[in-house]
Length: 278
Figure (cartoon, rainbow, N blue to C red):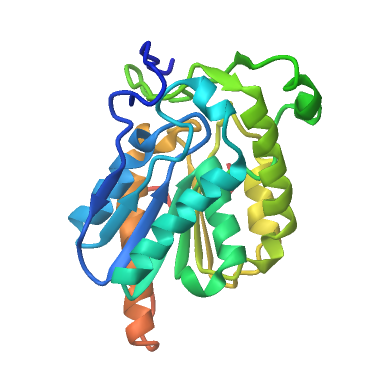
């Protein structure tokens, strides 16, 4: 379950603080998911920071305090925060990559379609493009009378690991998430950035339709697909977390080498499992 302390509006949950590191001339902006906090992407952010990259991991509006605060926001607020982080990184870096988990992946896809010249590449971890629940079509109606419902929380295979975030789904915010996904799905053909996709073979939050929509519909000619066999939805905190960090850093490093020397051929990282059909 998520850790949900009794906090007043504006007070942050432990671990919900944003992260920033000033490193080299290449930057990585990381983005957490819906009802989550920066804690879910902190291992990725810290991994890139340790490798010498400049990193920013913002806390999206309405997250990390009280679920009622999230109901007071909309997807345009979350996207504006990601764009703010990207603009700040571009002001101090030559190139910027985006890395997102779940809804964070959807926001990164939106940025790549909306501002393609600003995004050097995408690292997507179980990105959401379509909601699993058929009842999601009723969200715009139900959210007017019911503020929240129980959430599918803490989908992590590794015992004893928890994710900081909300234990309920704020429905007005969820209805706005659905609106975001309609925009993201429609614009997938406009995504041309190199993309590294991590997708869990077993995910109790998303169906595999989201990952396949990304694989089938984005226009990138540089697309790497990695299947995670030892993790559920919140893979960054699960058994495959170290693998995600190592492969993502390697992938960005190889793309940077090729950007400075087009004759360089990317080398495959040495990992036991490199993807394929689940």
